[in-house]
Length: 192
Image (cartoon, rainbow, N blue to C red; front, side, top):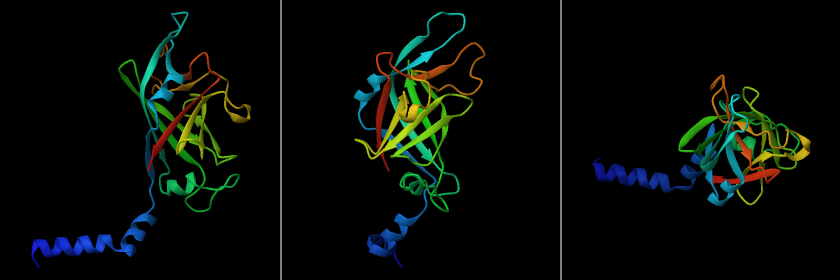
């Protein structure tokens, strides 16, 4: 077979409904979500704390990305699971990682484990006692990151989520927080 004939056979196979359906059923261990609107970044900031200084240095957030993953499972099953139940095989709890750009620096330390859905909200606990946050589905964006006063009274309002790596610096850390004028910051993400 010539190269052109092989390309034509592959193209026809890829266009067939059976091929597309089998590709759609493949499990995905991770999904990436991008900001739905940069305007939402005005609701958050990164607070750099240093015990030797009375007030935290506050930096504007200029970009964010959200990654949701379920190693060994299909993250889409977890994201679309029914409220109040832990889906069977491949569903249930999932993990989240948030990348934040502030002050010209990329922070990649925000990670957490999320619970199953309750009223389309999954509560998440950040690694290394880094705070709590939540994800909400079925809002104005595919997924919304909630920082600050979370639904159900969980998490101290305004305490934020650590975005620096565990053990970042003995003298301080970096936290993603709702701006002081807001109790809850909502950042929408769209993606896969």
